[in-house]
Length: 123
Image (spheres, rainbow, N blue to C red):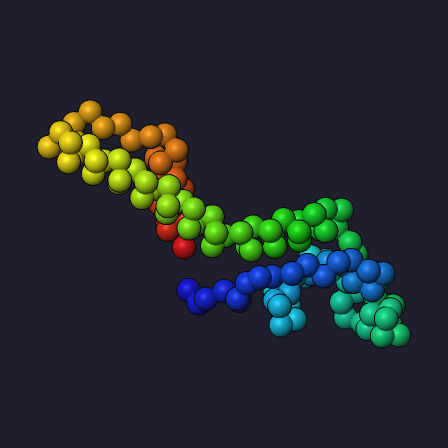
């Protein structure tokens, strides 16, 4: 799989000439969240008859996609930090007792590790 476009991504808001779309900071279009009424002819803006057809939740979806993408790296770093915290606790238990016996993995750490594993599987 190739690398995705660099973040942060941005939303270009809906106007009378187009629906929302997502771009890189350099202005490269990632995706459109609308369609044209007749993609085979020029748009109204360019003298044709085709106009943008807006999906009801397109603006909200575009904003959600950008928020998720732009938060991804920070969330992964947080999950890695949470998962590593458990290793510290386990190592303390090993140093104190000579074994991991009686060490219970905290629920938040387990959830973080499961989330990281599911992300790795999805890629």
